[in-house]
Length: 199
Image 1 (cartoon, rainbow, N blue to C red):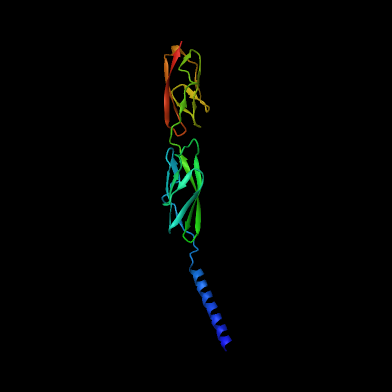
Image 2 (cartoon, rainbow, N blue to C red):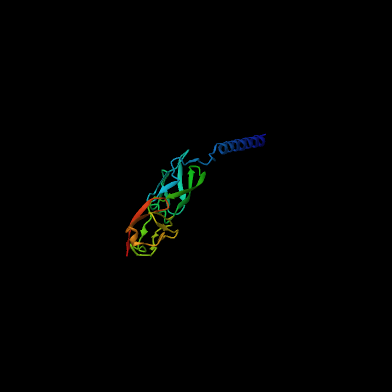
């Protein structure tokens, strides 16, 4: 009888321990945190570095994977250096939130850079005077890809920035000077030039 009681006691203890373990597993937090991006900016202007912030539905540790971007313990995301459209038109990275039990969730983010900086124009290829009968006015260049347009009567510009008069220069036509200007791809007025006709 003594052996039987000990056996029953051992089995009862094992069942109780197993029940407690199962209950512990059932109550364990296995749900990854939810990440909210309401305050995250998906566009950034030239020269800016702040990208806003992310939050979660519980206390988490933040981490980020991607070149040139950082996140702090409060979830604020920043570029390591100001955005520059001419260097990089967008930034992609992964943000991960890990809760206390070790559950984690990651999201992929792409932030586009807004080009708000006017191009720098190189006028060294332009002429400021032209002889009678000529049409070539030289060319203009920029430090970034642009769509050229020109403002001024009787003058045209090609897609590569080559500028010409629509008809040969004529000193005796009564027109002794011409004002023309350029716009960039975002239709921002860039500059203007005077051209004189020489006999």
